[in-house]
Figure 1 (cartoon, helix red, strand yellow):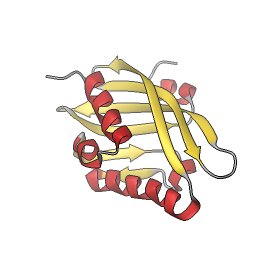
Figure 2 (cartoon, one colour):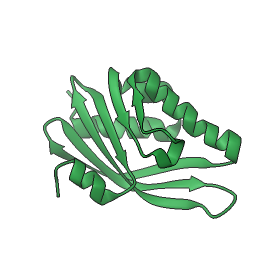
Figure 3 (cartoon, one colour):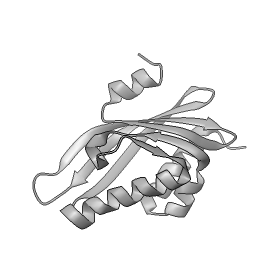
Figure 4 (tube, one colour):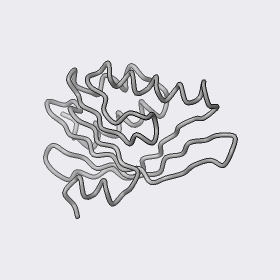
Length: 133
């Protein structure tokens, strides 16, 4: 059985290579997502359909505004039996000045699937949500 850290890395790798079917498969049917409204204007997505909605919302940035979102999560650590913290940097590439910001993700697992994802635009906020500070 894979560790939760391995599962978090696998989901990130699928997202990074654009394999959205593999990415969505990492999440439970009833997963809950909480993300910064800065990116898509929404803060909550529900279920695997919500994961796909998030992906479509991010793709719309490119279509409507010429922006491209990229995340580079470089650190993964288990912070509880059912939680993993991922830290890195995200970028919104655009014609005007690109925007780069810290990214922190708290993944919560049950039965080998991500049941909740909380994404932050600050490492400190992510660490706090993970119970580390």
